[in-house]
Image (cartoon, rainbow, N blue to C red; front, side, top):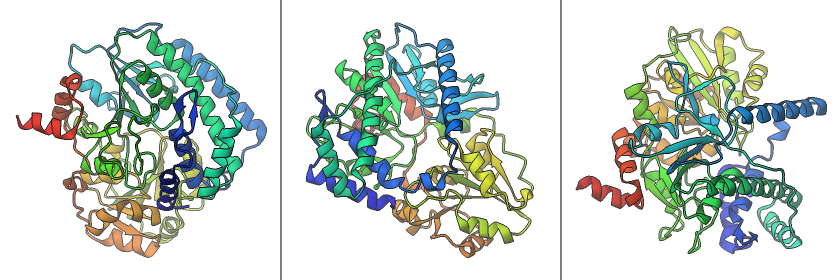
Length: 489
């Protein structure tokens, strides 16, 4: 199902208030239900497009992962107590390699760089980062403390069945996924409560991707302790992203949802507020994406050199199967590559969360001459690659905005990207095709001089602005107008 249709189905259920009041131990769990709906509606074909793995191989991989995680936690254990007033909690998928071979978290590390010197902070990850790598800012590993087998009540089953029938999915699938996520939430909630109980000085938590059970639990525990939570934008938050847009926020909000959304620019904030502009909680703030400015000022440009000799070098950013994007490398790109001129070269870069991405690419591209492409599976910095390419293609990744910063034109493809980026496509900021090799050939032949998408205000990137906000963080509500008034003063 395309993402726009999935969004409208979920919004319709929320408008009817069928499952909005569902709760567990007094905690409203509609955010979990909504996330489960979003996943089930947009990942219907995911399993059919993945290579099936033998059960023994799956079991062996799980055992290896368990041993690795257990060993990793011994050497990266969270201190029993902590003196920090500010915590940053992130995910390893945001790590980017720097020229000094350290890994920099593009979401939280720019804020750490800008933190006032008198602030005591600590950094945590909710999953292990690759072994033996050096982190630019040290971190410790935060994990749930126990397994959970929380069952769900008949009342919840009945409500979930109503919700599933309303949106047109199998109730058994929704119930299974909800139970799985609720169990993960309860594990993390216990860990989060213990973690915060020993940190009496903590008053602010910055976190990423709030809409998974681990972060929902951390936010819930923080709210119980009166600790402010701020979610940092990590990618595009369009008008049809059901985890940010289309919410009907109740007066007291949701325990699982962050107090504040730190947004890249005005469009993201407007999408969040569109259906509940008068909300008093879970409000967005136009605070910016300082990683771009940090890269420009403090990272030595190292354009990738293995394809810069080509007349046209095309970066393809690949995403996990979702919505109508059920084939990460679409047929029209393969068709074009079969006949493409020798001076055109492709670089395929997988989304960090697509663990099987490199293997998928090798299988998908195996029939093509190997001198036509490379698969970026060595963790190169995205911006280093953008500094060396001439064109960029994606289904709907927010990399299109970052590409425009470096003067690289983007071709979007598929119905989902048309829904997400229609305004930018109409303005000529991005090009678009439904999925035609002829369109791709014509686009590559043009002398593309793209407009900077960020002239429209989608991304503000300023270390100075970030430092300004963080210096006054305790005194601000993070409201955009309040920040603007202080800047003008």
